[in-house]
Image (cartoon, rainbow, N blue to C red; front, side, top):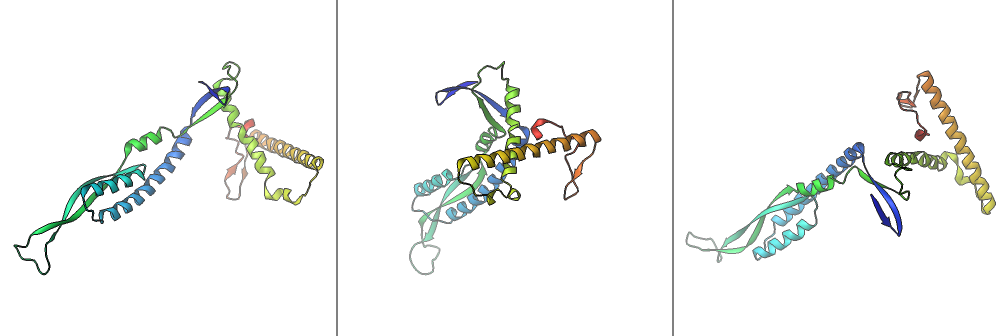
Length: 227
């Protein structure tokens, strides 16, 4: 779909990822369980309070419900009665209403949970290339995934073992020269990684890591986005 953002026409693509959905759903469930514990504790404290009238109790409950997103409390209000007067009561001693107590039951708000679940596993990609023929949706997603190689390059350059922080340069031309050297190092590193992966694929072999697990496995798809 086409939209306009900051005065620039753009084409937006909504992408759904099953893996991202499962990962975000798991995180959401943990958040819901944590909220339930906090809500039950708050309801316990509220249930032990005595209010002067039912409206005061309902007002406090309304304020409490607004603080939590995935749970709400169903309630009943009961009058708290006590014997009137001092001393030991007898069967004829009348009882008077001392206040009101609220009985709470915590329940999950399934509508709120399902509403958030519909947003999980989805993200938006945008481009200013409005021609779908020149840049189809599949190509947009492919180019987005290939950004991982660029991010991996930045992680390589910022690795402490590279000891880049040991260089102190101030003049612009020396900074440019250092950037050029770093870029060449990254190019050589990526090229070497490509040759290793290619050789492993051709020889149906793998390299074990420190735990003995297979890495650079030939069964994985060899693609440019991995480099």
